Image 1: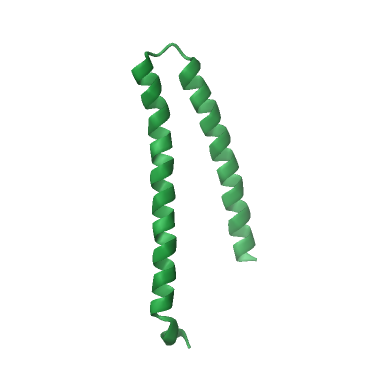
Image 2: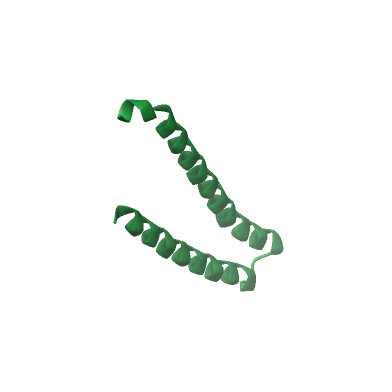
Length: 75
């Protein structure tokens, strides 16, 4: 049950994040900012999302390795 709840929460947060990012990018591109500012307004949240995704992936891989390392202790 806990895994299903986590999966549903992850999917819901992902949908909200993509929706918000879409509207943020639309606002940044339509507004009357100069082009370098528009590009930076789009690049910052995309960079943060890529960074967070890579950190989550690294933590997930580390947890798997840690679980394998202590597999004999759990028995």
